[in-house]
Amino acid sequence: MLFQGQAVPEPEAVADPAGEETPPGGHPVLVGLSEPFGQQRLTLKPGKRSVGRQADNDIVLQEGSVSSQHAWLVNDGGECRVVNLLSTNGTWVNDEKVHEAVLKDGDHVRFGRAEFVFRRRDDGSDARPGGGRRSRWRWLGIAVVVLVLAVIARILLETA
Image (cartoon, rainbow, N blue to C red; front, side, top):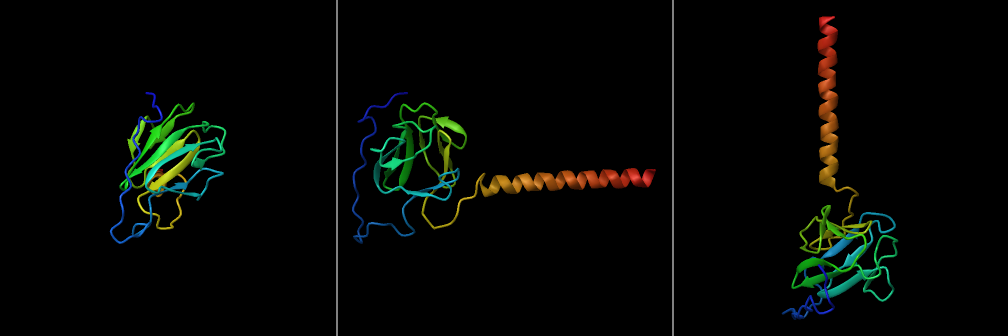
């Protein structure tokens, strides 16, 4: 799917009734997971931001797998989405290649090999590579295997 410069309309700016530029809790943010972007924060203020390796992008990612003009990040009234452009290595959300996707809190977003985690509000917390949930399940699986092996060993020792 190809997108022209006007394919995704620029969201209309909505004035905050209190006159504040930053919403309570902060703007949505992408927090870097992969090096050299580990813990780097990309704030998604209202509007459309270009992402790519080329210097004239709003968000410049100096990484060989990122295309010159890779994607758009769109914050439309707090709903954020990513739109892939003509990237060579694709735009991925939760390990699924996408042309366009609405982002939910905790989604993993990858431009080529540059990986980030999406947060609805920038609370300043660190992102963990691989995501905390996956890591916990991995350790739980290892613990179950060790426990099963221990039970089998005990049974074998008692019957010998």
